[in-house]
Structures are given as structure tokens and as C-alpha cells.
Length: 627
Ligand code: SER
Image 1 (cartoon, rainbow, N blue to C red):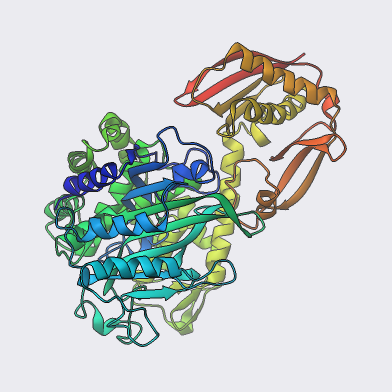
Image 2: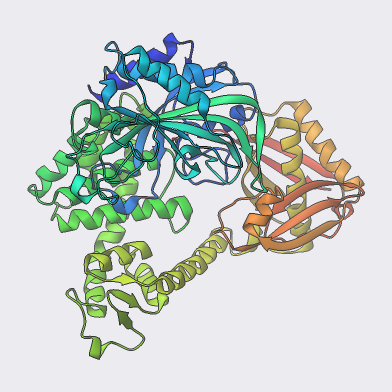
């Protein structure tokens, strides 16, 4: 079965069960500042899982583009990749465990659909803890499903690993979400295929005593059905949701590999042509490096298509790391120069029909990849040469360590600033330097990496300040006028959210002494009435003479407080939270911001929107003044 057939079968099956297909959202989450990329099909559905009505109804299905880079260093083995498609179905307060499990079982085992031998299936369920009880209901439903095909599905008792079908496991295994810091989550039941004892059995970390959830590769998880009935709040508590939801996700590449009897995902029709092209161009050398190139360039293509560009910051830095990692592997394979457009063509051939945005953005994709290749390609060899001088392949004489270097076993301690300098001088993302050293047999110790990350962070702060016009928070100067307008921007954001809805987030701002320019997410032109309402709300807060206070706290606490802001900072970092209002007059807005601000909203005068226009797709721009 190829990818097209699997997507169609899945979607049509759920349409036949009353679902509506929704399109894949961008890999850049639109309204969730707590994550960098869309990691699952549920991500764009968070507001609806929390109770908002979805325009397409309460049963939805989709094929979602997902990016997960947490296991980037494992890419190249049989199951890891950084981009994948997730087939999903959702109940928004409609059906629950019964239908969800029965339909999964039907889709997997019925010969009209995937026709998998039920003997090869094993499932896990939540064993229960202080937050939620043991999932007896799912156990019972699974037993009935298996019994319908003549299988007596035993529950795992701690010993019967081979015979058992249903394994109750703790939260680590059988709880999903929230995707970010807070949000919908719940117990899940995961479905595994047993590939049989032969697969990596001798390297099983549990000495062959394995069961679903073991990492030896015998059991491959293909589908996860989450019963989302809780919301994890900012204090870490699990509150019951007003509705019981189902959120399921099936990995396309893994399922394809399993259905076709491949022993790795790179044989599937969405990856094989890319790997084959890399091998053809490089003369068929190292399989793992070819897979890294294929995977990373595929992910980069999807990221760029959805608007990410390589940079020093956050998403852009992850993209940069992927491209540079791919380029390094391409160099070790001695790929010809200018290989990128050829690979992009192959990727377009695989995905162009399913994701036409790739074709529309092709020129930009090739341009960004080539720009990055040019920037990095020039310095790569020099960087490697310098790195070898610092620490030659094959090791260094422990008696003759350069100053500041310590080595114990294969753990190397150097000044983290040196690692960072390789980024500044040769463009090596700090993690890449670490990986190259690992290939040479040594690992940086944690302190070295910590220092390198800190140096990187300082560098990122500077870039952010520079791109904001050399002044904090988008200010072109800090005269009293701009300070007033900056304060007004906070009131404006909150007023927009009150009038237009919670989908409104700040997308940028630029302030001169004369006016405030403010970009925000909203799909439509604002009506005259909406403009007036927003103005009125801002002016009301000015009239109320709200005190403005600022408090420094770490980012987690700021989020817990519910402060708005661009959560680009790292955990543990101190941020300033500006609060407009107090208990007596009511708190109107809380926002993470660099400042500066006036002390009381009464200093602002009268607020007027001069213009409201489109800025880019889904983003509106307001120009406003204080009079
Ligand atoms: N959100 C769940 C997962 O990612 C099910 O889709 O596994």
C-alpha cells in the first residue's frame, strides 16, 4: 500500500463514520506561543477540545503535517524522522472510548481496510494513579473486539508478556498531552504491531523480557487513541473538561513500513525516492548519512513552505540546524555541489499533489536552501579543520592537553565560549559541533554545553535587539511619546482580543514618536463598529487611570500568571511582566515585555485608530496615535 492509498483509506473510513475532513494546518502553530512547531494533529484543534464549537461539527478527521525534532540525533535508524504525517480522527464531545476503540480495531483488522492479522496486535492502557483511575473501560472494549475474532485477550499480570494482549502501564507510557505547557490531555490506549522476536531481539535493553513500550524495536506503535477529558492548568492540576474528547493519531510512515513488511520507514514511498536520489548522486555510500540528508531536507522544505527562514532564533535556528546537519552529511557523502534543487524536485514529485503549497513556494524553498548552503558550505571545511586542531580525530595526548581543556574517559571539558565561537566564525550550530565531536569519540560535558548555550542565548538577545531597530521592544527611540505609545499597544492588544476573540495575538509592532504600528493575527478586515469598540475600550482604560506595575519573574511563573507575550525565551529565564490595573480597578492586561512604560494609563491622552489594513495573510495592521 502506498501513501496515497493509506491516506485515502483512512480519511474515507472516518468519513463513512460521520467525520468531516479538515485540511492540514501549517507546521508553524498559529496561535500557540508555547510550542515552536505543530507536533500532532490535535494542535490546531486545542480551542475546540476545550469546548469551542468547530464549524465542521463534532467529528473531524485529517492528515496533518507534523515536525518533531526532539530525536534528531536518532534520525537514520529504522523509525526516527523529523517530519511525518499524522492521520487523525477526533470526537469533540461526541463519541468516546467505545466507538474510538471499535473503529480503530475495525480499520486495522478488516480486510476491506488494512487487514492486519489481529494476532500481531498488542495494546496498552492507562494503569491509573492519583490523577485518573485505571482504564477498565478500555480493557473491556478491547477484550470484546479481540473476542469478536476469536481471540481471548489476556491482561498483562507482570509475567505473561508473550501471551498478554492488553498492558496497563503508567502515565509515562499511557498519558498524552498537553502538547504545550497547559491544555487538554488524558489517558490513552496505544496500539502496537509485534514484529516478532527476530527484530533486534538480542539488543533488547530488557534482556528479551520485552513488551509494548520497550525500545528494542520488536513492538512498533502505530496508533494512539487519547481520551482527552482533562485540562492541565497552569498550576499543574488536572481539571475535568466540560466535554469528553477523543484525539487519535496514526503515523503514516510507520504504518506504511509495517503494512509493506519493510524493516524501516525509509523504504516507504514518501522517503525512498529521496534516499535513492541521494545515493545516486553520491555513488551509494553510507545509508545512514543518506537518510539524514533525505529526512532533514524534506523537513526543511515543509518548514520553509510554511514561512520559516533560517536564522539565529528559535524556529529559524532549528531550521538552520537541520539544513546544516544535512549539508554536513552531504559533504561526507561527497555529494555534488548544487544537489539541493535536485532533491527539492524529488520532494515536490512526492508531495506536490497532497500539499500544493509546496509547488507554489518552490522558488522560495530552493532560494532559502541554496542561500544557507552557500553561507555554510564556504566555512564548513575550515571549521572542521579548526576543530581537528582543537581536538584531533583519534584523540589527544592526555599529558599534553591544551590550556583550559580537561578530559576524563571520553568526556571533554572546554570553555563553552569556544564551542559557541565555532557558530560565530564557521556557522556550526553548537549542537552540530557537539555531534561532530561525538563522531570523533568524545562528548562535551554538560557544563561545556551549558556555557555554549548561554553564549548562544546572549548572541540571540543581541540579534533580537538589532532586528528591533536597536532598541528594546520595537522602539525607535525612548522619548516620552514612544513610551506612551508602547503602553497603549498593550491596551490595544487586550481590547482587540476582547472585541475580536482569543485568536488575536501580536505579530509585530513598530513605534515612532508619531505613531504606533501594530500587527496582529485576524483573518478579516475589521468593521467600522469593531474599530470603534476597540477605541472605546482603550480610552475607557485610559480614563480609569490604571496603575502600571512591573514585576520580574521567571518565564514559567509568567505563563502561570496568564501573561500574554511572545514566549521565545528559554525556560528559567527572567522576564518582565507588566500589569495594567489592580485589584480595585480591575486588572485589564498582563503582558511579558521589555518596557519601558508610563506609570499610569491616565498619562496617555486620547487613543485613535487611524488606519486598519492587511499586513500579510491572516495578519492585520493597525496604525494608531495618541492625541
Ligand atoms: N495527540 C496524540 C499523539 O500525538 C494522538 O494524536 O500521539
